[in-house]
Length: 351
Ligand code: GLU
Image 1 (cartoon, protein in one colour):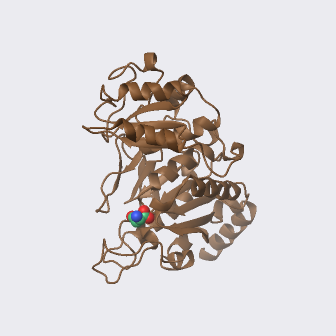
Image 2 (cartoon, rainbow, N blue to C red; image 1 turned 60 degrees about the vertical axis):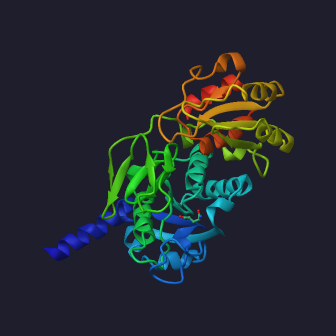
Image 3 (cartoon, rainbow, N blue to C red; image 1 turned 45 degrees about the vertical axis):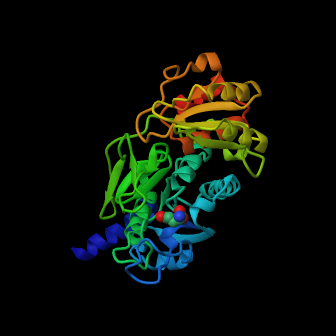
C-alpha cells in the first residue's frame, strides 16, 4: 500500500512538478541587526550591525531548506540609517532584475530596522511584479539571548515562498506579523514587537504557514504608475523633512532651499499644523516651485486637506496617512514625473 502511494506521488510529481517542487527564494542581504554581532549574549542593544555575511545567516537557520530552495546575495552590508536614495535606487534595480527571472519565485530582503519601512515602501511603488517581496529584520543580534532574527528569517522565507502571498504588495515580516509596506512603521526602538500599522497587520505566520486577515486597498507593485525602469538617474529628486514643534525657525526651510530641495515634507504638529509665523516662508518657497507637503509628527491618524491650513489656496499637499518618511519617498517619485501639486495630492490618496 505504502509502495503504491509512493509510486503515485512520484508519478504525480512528474506530471505536475509545480505541485510538488519547492519554490525558489532569493535572500538579498543588506545588513542591519539581523546581521549584527555583539560582544556577549546579554548585549541585546549594544552590538555592531551588519557584520554577518548572508551565507552564515542562511546556514544559521537550516530549517528554511524545508520551505524553499534558498540562495543568498550580499547586496549591501550596512546599518540602514546609512541608506541614501542612491542605495535605494540601486537596490530596486537589483530586485527588479531578480523578479524578472523565471526561476525566482520570491524575494526576501534582510534589512536594518531603522529605515526598513522606507525600503519596503519604495519597492512597493517601483517594482512591477506579483511575486512576493518580503523585507525582514530583527531587533536583537544573532549573538543575543532569544535572538529574534532566526525565526523572523524562517517566517520571511515561508511568506516569500507561499503562493498566497502573490499580488499582496511588498510585505514586511516582523515578530510573526505580516504588514503592508505602505502603512507599517517602526514604533518601538527597543523591543521585538517594534513594528506596527495603525490599520493593523495583514496576517501572521505560524509554524511556517501563512494566515491572512485583510488586504491593502491601495495601488502597489503591478498596479503602480511608478516603475524603476523609468528612472534613468542614480538618485531621486531631493526631498527633505522638517520636524515640527513649538519654536520653529524659518531658516530651517531656507537652508533646504539653498541645498536645492525640490520639495519639503513638513512633519507638522497635530493634523499637520504649521505655525502662522512659518506660513509666509512656505508660501514663498511654493511660489519658487518647491512643493510643500503637510505631513504629521503624530504616528496615527491622517492629515485632512484644507483643515488646519487652506491647502487649496496655498497650493500645498496633504500627506494623508503616509508618515513623513514615506511622504518623502512618494513625493520624490512624483517629482520624477514632474507632478504638480494637484497630481501629487491624487498620488497621496492613491498609494
Ligand atoms: N541601526 C541599525 C540599522 O538600522 C540597527 C537597527 C536594527 O537593524 O534593528 O541597520
